[in-house]
Image 1: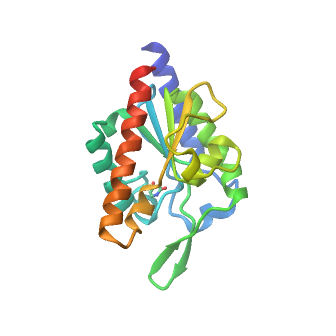
Image 2 (image 1 turned 90 degrees about the horizontal axis):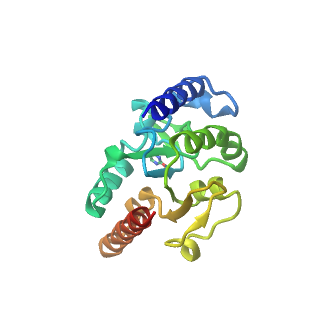
Amino acid sequence: MAGQKALAAKLAKVAEEAKGCTRCSLYRNATQTVFGEGPVGAKLMLVGEQPGDQEDIAGHPFVGPAGKLLDRALADAGIDRTQVYVTNAVKHFKNEPRGKKRLHKKPNRYEVEVCKVWLAQEVSLVKPALVLAMGVTAAEALAGRHVTLARERGKELDFGESQPGMVTVHPSSILRVPDRTARHEAYAELVKDLKSALKVLQAA
Ligand code: URA
């Protein structure tokens, strides 16, 4: 326990440092750094791409529409979100102002690369038993190589740390599926991947 307290204190210090991050230019258009959240020692770490509009305003990861879908999928898979560490590969919201709206823009390779310093510290301090990347941006940041979702989803991957990694879809991609039936199927696949992650954890 004492060890966990020390790790939590270190993680809080890293989160504080990340608040002032100017390693790339994304901080200029964002409200704030959105650092990961969840308990140190969480068995499962979920990694998304970057905070969205609502996360940027709230300062918390996965609280907007994608977060609501993720909450439902976690519950359907029998996973308690309060026991999971949830973070993103990139800690600032990359967007393009368009009238009153801010359009989400995909982070480029450089932005993902310089942001890895935060993700690496989260992984090494939280020490999860499994890291589940949600989407290719997160998977590639963790694996340090090109990742093909269709081929690699559901398998155990090497994310360069001692714990295994896995990849699933990004919850936002499900929200973008136009056809209702296909959307339900994509959602069911996400729940299936979360259940597979749970199985890996139970076997660990
Ligand atoms: N999409 C992400 O990748 N992360 C969030 O925190 C919210 C939406």
